[in-house]
Length: 393
Ligand code: HEC
Ligand code: HEC
Image (cartoon, rainbow, N blue to C red; front, side, top):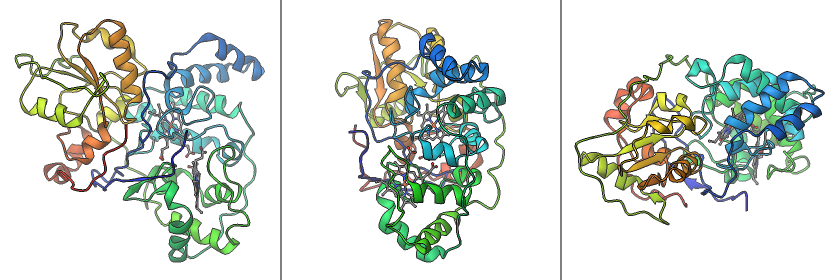
């Protein structure tokens, strides 16, 4: 099944004002097709788009960076419940700028990284626009939207809790559907955009149409409720940090090798990794997310080797040292990295089971710009949180 309506509670760690929401509920193993671009579909896209070269370029970037989670054809749900980017009602209601902003800025606190170079991601503004052109080529142009409607946010909260929260979650509890209180979404969106999704749904995804199920007033109320979470100011620019090219690869080169117990011969728990670091054991930790995420925060000593940049894997010594990869997915990008290492006969490799959002939620050690920006949050980590549900693999 592609979509589960159960949600799991995740407590909020106010780290640099980011939402701490795990976007990853779906365990995905190595059976998923690789996101490596292949010439054929790109050529087919190009023909379909009347030969627009921007669309062809966008299709290539999409295959390399996005298909991993949003699926090869853009219909979403390949990992992490990443939404569809090509449903008719999404493309009708999303302006090019809304889509571009999603790519550029990401959705902090979820598996959706910032891909814009200004945020430390891999894509130039032109490449972002080409991806938008590619997505747009798969569906309709934007249509004029009816206004979002005025309502009462307090009443809207009740509407939301009754009709929406099981899927969408809230600030303290992650749901499986897009988080509607995310500051980057609300900075880029309009009340009319939100309303359009509520009235029309997002067929064929699980987002239902509430036309006839909620009154005009209730729809206005819930839009006002969501809109009340819009930040007063856009997120401040993060300082662009260049990732040093000479980072040491092996952590504790003089330490002993850890003794890991792997689940299914593949997954090592966050706790074992934390203990290995505390015991100063020899290990390589790979951060498989986009570099913008590494810049924000990462496990101390982890090297940035994003899932889309696998040729850099040759830096990793193949001498029996344990190599652990992690991402936010929590298995998908890191799984691809571990598959690539295993294909090259690295003997001791593992995927960090619960992923980095869970690690962060536990208050385990982290370093990076967001940690520096919020010293009080990192100095007093939320520590072990009793009663916290462990994500299902
Ligand atoms: C590691 C998984 C992952 C990758 C890779 C990824 N995304 Fe996402 N994306 C997500 C998730 C999860 C969300 C929903 C986040 C949320 O809950 O708010 C999302 C949301 C989005 C949105 C907002 C859509 C909406 O309806 O609001 C856009 C646009 C988007 N992604 C585009 C892209 C593009 C383009 C790429 C490639 C450059 C990409 N994503 C790569 C996981 C991913
Ligand atoms: C059965 C689960 C479910 C319920 C109930 C539900 N939604 Fe959704 N909703 C989704 C999914 C899944 C998506 C993402 C669809 C996609 O892939 O584009 C979504 C998308 C949206 C979007 C678009 C967000 C974006 O960034 O693209 C809005 C707005 C929205 N829902 C509002 C609501 C509101 C308000 C309610 C309650 C009145 C509600 N939803 C109830 C599952 C649900």
